[in-house]
Length: 82
Image (cartoon, rainbow, N blue to C red; front, side):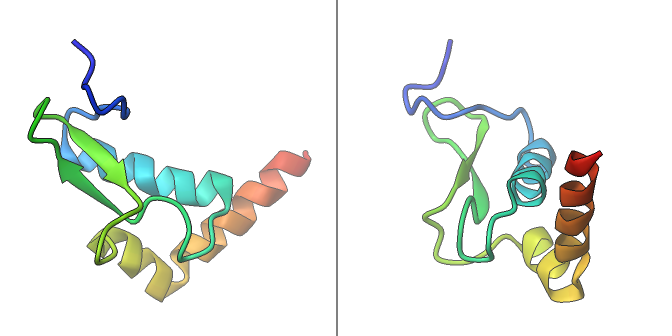
């Protein structure tokens, strides 16, 4: 049964983090935009993305700090041009 939050459900933290990072890459979000973290839902037990977190997800932050996220965003832009 779908979650009453109407948010997309992920079966694990890893899947939710991958989806969050993919959104940042392919939608080209600026650091303060888009989903910032994931959480386990108390209603459905699955994982959801949130843009209303008080802190940024550790994996996402590491990718931002290392420049990896920006490189992947640039690569995604170029892929769309071909």
